[in-house]
Image (cartoon, rainbow, N blue to C red):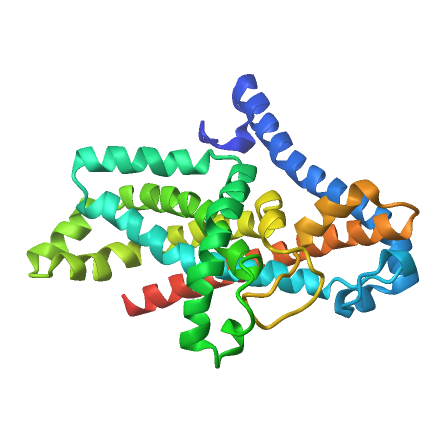
Length: 315
């Protein structure tokens, strides 16, 4: 005798329609993704045929006049600015989430939570304008000279304090992804059973020890997911990065130097690209951005699985 909740038993017609609709929606996501990749491949084929895919990835020369295109400076700029954003935003976001869920009074939690959500709704062009008017002059006059004086022997902090560059773009990205990571982390921490925290406190743990030994291990997987959401926005952000990174297709070791990112060069040049090679090269950059995002997402999933396995073995 078949169980009533067995999908193979046929079931109600409405259930079948509902299940079929959900399957269609799920498959539609894959179809849209596949169409985007297919169109990008078709448009970038003339450039890859002339330049070569691996030469395109490893090349550093970008000269539309001579049909010479290399994606390496843009890949470098994208990864550097995203890395700066993650390094700066993750500790602040996790700390803010722990403060809102573990320590803040209810009134403070509501006020701070409202402003965190407000930050997430600010358009990127506004962040870019604020960065040009406030952040860049501050970096040029105070932060970069101080970093150069203290750590100038390190290539990362060498060179003249220009204001515009990798550091400015990375910091504005950190501000932009902070509310995303913090909001998701707060929701993850709210799902934690109170018995875990109370059990740690009952065993004599301090509040910090309870957070470190009970709260963070439970929420680690969800927090990694929040970081990946923030990283995805950092990799694909266009307008604010375009306004602050300096838009120079070169590779520099110094964070003070200007650079370029994949999304920025596509936004800047696609409207004026002519012929088949230049638009194809820009579409190839879009494919590279797809690949970088996919690779980092796969690495994040692997990291989540490894960390979850370590936690289970330790338990």
